[in-house]
Image (spheres, rainbow, N blue to C red):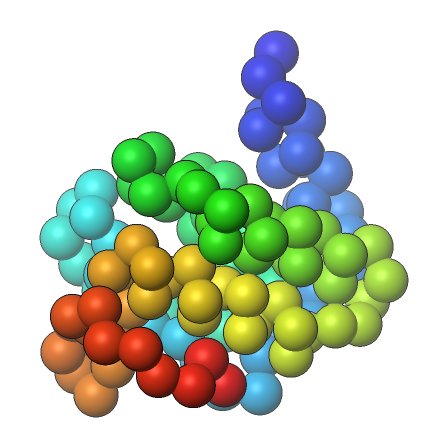
Length: 108
């Protein structure tokens, strides 16, 4: 079985931390927006729905931040920031109702 499958099964039984603010992502698989409200939702998006061609260093950092937050039950702010950075780099972050265009902004 794949590493992602094993990781996803572990994710489902770990503590979850809600984000202080939701993050809206443009899901490239079905061309719909998806609102991410907590660490487990972010991990699910990263592991199961993230564009394969956009899985670089910021993606890996976001997966790691989510993993740490889930293991400890803390770190939701750090996981959210890492998730935002990865989404901006992948050009799938929706801000103010519009899909992000690659402009650099504060990831908080």
